[in-house]
Length: 499
Image (cartoon, rainbow, N blue to C red; front, side, top):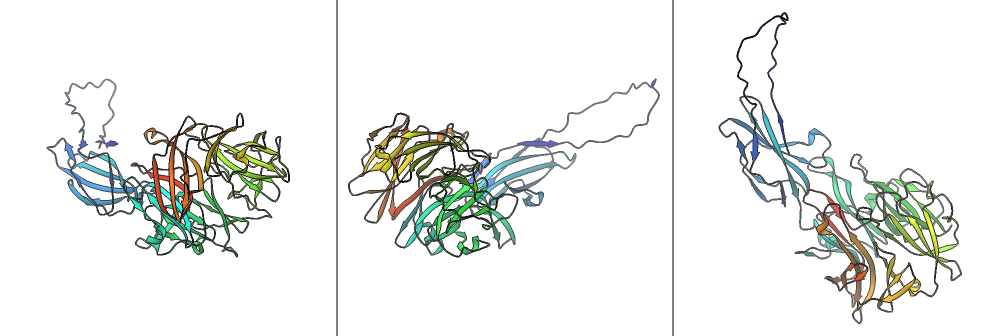
């Protein structure tokens, strides 16, 4: 983008009578048109890399004053602009922290004061900027393996920080807006962070390095008395954790420096381990004590129950067997939720269809219910995965994979064979469809297995509800609990399969 600001000469002229006649001749020269060329629109580099910057300026036969500036993409004030060179030709040794920046070159004509500038995207990254994060556990605790097209990093948490997380793995969450104190500048700075939760630990990791930027004790204003972590899930600009049947909330804001879980949702409740979160709206939760759909937010001190209606969302006298999300369009990830419910002490099974984008507790998210045949094998399966594009649930039973069509309640075995001796530990349908980046879209049925202390993660492409042979396989030690793909685009935009 180029902007021009032209210096104008203001002339004060006396006022004359209307009969004044001007016979003078004037020669109006065209304003100076400065053009800057010869620089790439964007750079993707690592700290320490050297970029040779050689801009060309036209008209070339003039005397210019030049300078370069760098500004973080998320900068909110002019104070963040850093002038880094006053040379036209500059060999820049990248000295920025990991992140996305705007690199600007300005050329000012000394005679007229007219100047032009151009901006370029500067993406300072590492080999962990794009790839698969595999949350896993073993007898020693919880860790993460990272896989990209050309890099494998095993036991990221241990290798970077010298320790694993305590307990069994639970979940991951990504945020652009976690604040960390920078010792070099003595200021709080925004950090792209991945929250990892295990049954007795929570850490915030630097997205690019895996370094723990906040440990369990750092993350709470009011440290829970019992270190019993049950779940981690997202809300609109929030991250929530449930510890010892109490939900704690942290607000993730680009404008306010929140570093801890500062809100406690009061009440007598016991949440199901299933939850639905689209990141854009309120999370959908289920209280097992009252058998009711509920939610939490930073605007309420309590666990909030959705308004009742027809069909009912409260006092259902049912248990939740499974909850998954669908996406009706590429840009509306998780806008529909499907819950498989079972009547307490009965063989009454129901399929609940819910609004996956609940904006208020004053509205009932349950849109419709329908009976499920109690003979469906899916209802006794331990691992289930809802196709985000269709009313199909994939499941594993007796080491075989099946698909259940919810529209006609038929089941069929998939043409996917789990190798003998491998035990399925995790299944999820992952849809990746960032806006405008169609070439990178994918639909995978992700299946993780374990055998003799080792895991395999199979990425099976899904086309028109047909599960194809795995096109990628990741291997490592431990048992997998969650897999997700995260990417930093060249323009600094971040995308993820997490929701």
